[in-house]
Image (cartoon, rainbow, N blue to C red; front, side):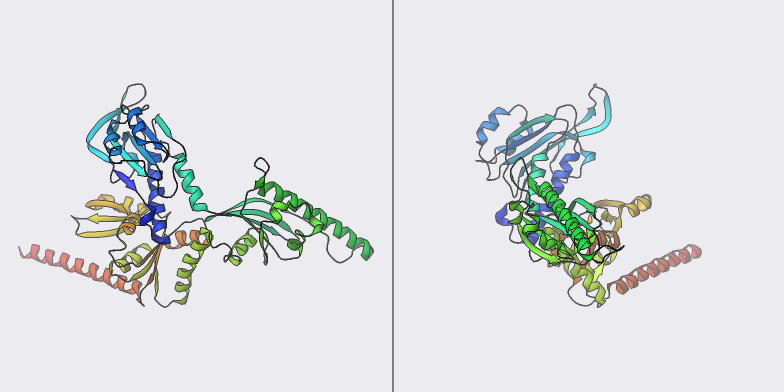
Length: 457
């Protein structure tokens, strides 16, 4: 099997996100694969390497992959990754790539026969967005995909933004990379108030307060230098910095009163914004307020997608739908314009019963409880099914989001990570309920009919 996702075929952000999801899932499945001893082979071929050299040097170890390499007259622009070996097919969820003709009973490293059956897997991948940086040839009991995962992570993250959330009570340092925000450090402070106490002179109290503020700003600047400057590489670790707070402290960081702040960070400040909160809530508010500056950040894109759905739900005008049964009911009737899926909703399954005559949608938990009562023909992931078929079932747009944002977590936990914007107003919940009630009544009538026939006979 050859898996190639070519940039020339990716025409928009939607197709790019789908391609990224497929590629990421492919690498995750490869990470789960296990074989015996050193029979599992990983081969990375960088685009600068002549393919004929690799064919000759790994001929013995890659007999099962050689004929696939021969399909290429030259190394593709992003290189090739070859994964080949006898592995336990029960551990991974690949539809293709296995050779049905070859299988054997596995053994452990001591030569003892185990219960697992090993099947031959041969997968050739053209990395879609980044060229392979280094050649690699590795024999092990597992596949090595770290290089590809790191490159994928770098591509998805894009720019890195630093946040300094500072006010008179606390200071927080964080980064935003792609759709992932990370709090680096947070500390509290107790600055003197503006009003004098205990008979102190107003001038003396103001002077003490100014000294405390300067010491606080110096500490903030020093910590910013520590977290946002790489001393070994002598460069900033972020592409831009946002200063946010509810007082003038954020502005004073850029004045001569706080010249401890490294000039390399001063040059990276792209905005100073006023916020109502400090700490983690202040970080979330700062990200929301400066989303125009963070257009390249996937975090903001995902927030906007999910908030569009939440806004439609709040209006209550029957132009939106959430939940597994409701969404799939609307999808199957061709009512969904924009379909939104959380990548983490891997527990949603499409179950085919009785020789393709009936389809049910269940979570893993529901399937586990009902499996012994059902005549199951096929089980597949709802996400995989929709990604492969959304064009043919009337969905105009498919949006994939993560659960890395607050909104993403709410979407996953509250609505099973599946929702949609409808083409027109439809009361999906009522229609679904009516259909279910009709099916129950039909089953009851058929059961009564059978009982009457038995009594007559």
